[in-house]
Amino acid sequence: RARDRARRIAGLAAGLGLETSPDPAAAVVPVFLGGAREALHAGDLCRKNGLRVGCFRPPSVPDGRSCLRLTARATLDEAELTVLGTALEMIARSTGRSLHT
Image (tube, rainbow, N blue to C red):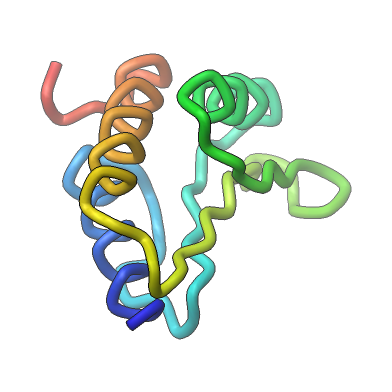
């Protein structure tokens, strides 16, 4: 069930124009944002929405591949997915990657 939730999260991100893994092999879903500044800003947006996410940037990842790492869990409910979807939409818009501008 956690993997199903991970696929849902990846679908939410991809549907907004964010780069992610289309079929996560586990519960971790990367959302690639490019530069470290963009990733830090996105992490802040998530935290302001009550979400805990990992924010990875150089030297942990190559230059230009900074990302958020979202971790799905089997108990993730629809309300939490809605909050996550809202945060991802804010991230997509703030990074200029949104398909819904």
